[in-house]
Length: 111
Image (cartoon, rainbow, N blue to C red; front, side, top):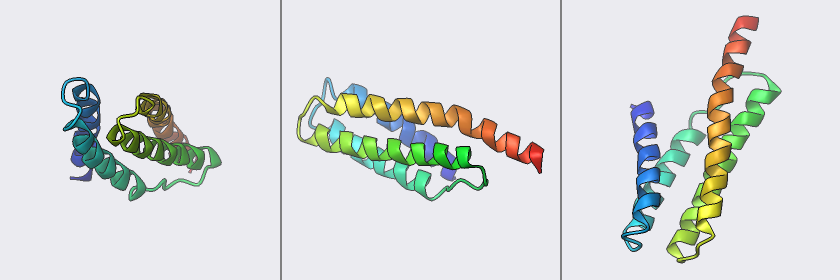
């Protein structure tokens, strides 16, 4: 269930970012809901491994959630800088989501 909500919230984040061009009054609310859901699921699913690199990658995911929360705040304030924060958070999240499973596999092979 947690995995499905995680994917739905990610899709809603993308949808609300693109929806902002057409409906700037509604998009921040969808973004706020989806970013909070995404962040809560990320925080409640901690890194289970012991490697320093894996912990760093998990902290990078937390940083990306904080950046997305800040972007949502700027979206509510009608500031255009929200785009920069959202892109930065997305890049960090993309990197960590590709590298973290590889790191977990390396740890499982080493045990």
